[in-house]
Length: 183
Image (cartoon, rainbow, N blue to C red; front, side, top):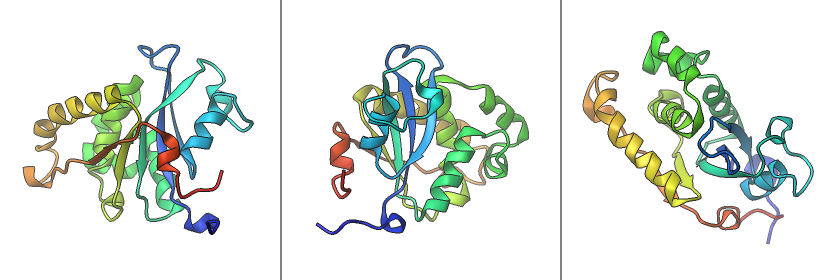
């Protein structure tokens, strides 16, 4: 198998949730080219995890967003997901007032709600983004949130037909997602 060059590798943004404290707001948003390796780093199995995730281990990847056109697009998505209140792209969709509320929304549902609005942004419309869920519970949380927000989001856009449902995939094994990557 040919080894992929860095600029050829698929890029992902992901949302981690603490397994130790699933009901708390302990979440983390990041970027990677290899989700399987990255979760092992965050959980301390191999070197290289973020300092901020040393607490509340172990972690699980609740959502992995893939399909970015390039690394720049994925990194700008990651930054906007971490800072929705400062992102001009997100504020254009939800308005300045609601963007401030997104800043204060924590936990799995809060981060997923921010993700929902980000998927409505023109900046990533050209990318064929796919949401990969690693557990049924995360997928069900997403579907319930999406059903709840679609009618509310209709007033934010010009017509209700502008609102798009994201393509979702259940991935129970991260190695399956990274099958084209060398370990």
